[in-house]
Amino acid sequence: MTTGRLEAFSDGVMAIIITIMVLEMKVPHGADFAALRPLTPVFLSYVLSFVYLGIYWNNHHHTMHAVHRVSGSVLWANLHLLFWLSLVPFVTGWMGENHFAPAPVALYGFVLLMAALAYTIMVRAALRVEGPDSNLARAIGRDRKGNISVVLYVIGIVASFFQVWVAGAVFVAVALIWLIPDQRIERVLQE
Image 1 (spheres, rainbow, N blue to C red):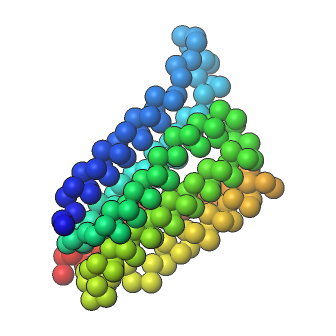
Image 2: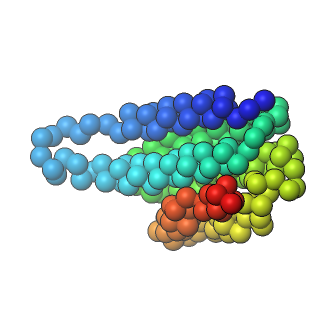
Image 3: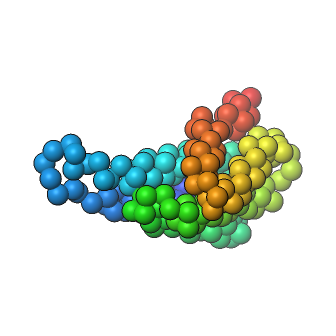
């Protein structure tokens, strides 16, 4: 089976997730800029989550271009990833509404960690279909960025209970690491 249907479904789900997230931002009562001030934490958490969803969408797109066919295990692994990403609007809202309190920030980090692990599982499932000599295998390599991200998420989750601003900085740092699309797959596909 080819990747077209999987990509189309995933794109649609990610678009819905982003839409849900923006709909969770409530319009303030008041017609001046001061009315927006209480929404600052909600907006900041939305921006960070939007960037994360964009990163996942972008890297999912690149990964599927390196994959020629998918199996049932790839489809289920992809659904597993989408499950964790579908929780992003909830944890984003909870974190923003509670002004980055420790428990919501920790849960936010946990959802990010689980999405990262789910993405890794999806890539591993695709590698089993594509084989060890595939474009995807050459592009992924040892996946240092992915492994570093998992470690940083765990640090961020733990830090959220002691210094919530450190946790936030860690989650922003991981986003910055991934902000530039994964060049490994582009390089391999251009060869």
